[in-house]
Image: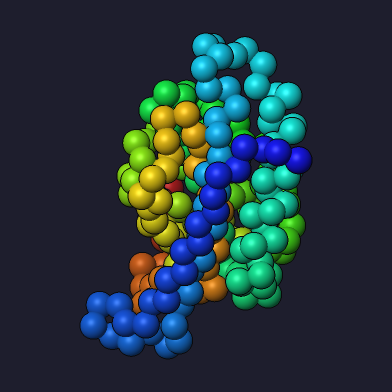
Amino acid sequence: MDIGLRKISTFIEETIVEGGKAAERPITSVVVAAVLRNPWAGQGFVENLRPEILRIAPVLGAEMTRRLTALMPAERIEAYGKAASVGVNGEIEHASALIHTLRFGNMFREAAGGTTFLSFTNTRNAAGALLALPMIHKTETGKRAHFLTANFQVPDAPGPDELLVAIGASDGSRAHPRIGDRFLDMAEMEAEKAPAQA
């Protein structure tokens, strides 16, 4: 099926040393980014985005998931996320449309063995902008060690009438996490309230 795909770019980063200290093991992140024609470009305000979402999102989700899990199999994935950027002629809703549907997200989540939502960004950018893809742990939303961001850029995308859609995964946390997770804060805050209530 022709979904207007122009290119797919893949980014792999290994963190070996952070803060001057070697990580216990290299931590790898992978981003797969697809650049495609914005199917709503040049049409003015389109009320019903659903037909193109149903046509494009499942095909795009399947291909991008296949490529990412070929580089990082599900058993290695600890954190994941997604991002979309629309070119300057489009609406942010166009970027949102292809990633905020279960027909796209569920493919990646299920392939990764995840249960949490896919954290996300959806923005409008000129070609070559630095893009941020946030990630969280695939099964524990409060695990701050896995609050990660993969930065990447595609020099010629998104064009004015294009969309850039990306998924990302990491096989570990930040190199040296030491700020505790949300559950620690919650327990401490409850303990602080207890004497005042006694």
